[in-house]
Length: 56
Image 1 (cartoon, rainbow, N blue to C red):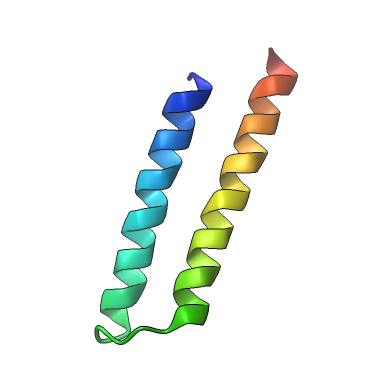
Image 2 (image 1 turned 120 degrees about the vertical axis):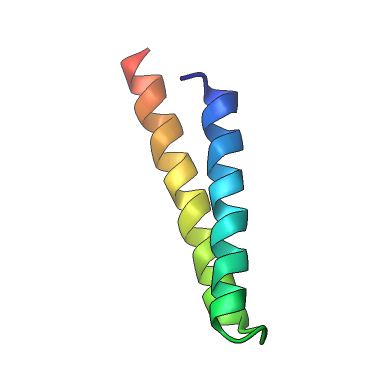
């Protein structure tokens, strides 16, 4: 997969994960959960992009 497509998919997964965490908390904003979800997803993006660059 191309890097831009991987990043786009990861951002979509990140947003869905953040929304899911928000809804599971009873629509209460818990910044630690949402921030942790977003940070985890973006770290995943970095790892995937680095792996793709090594394979190229």
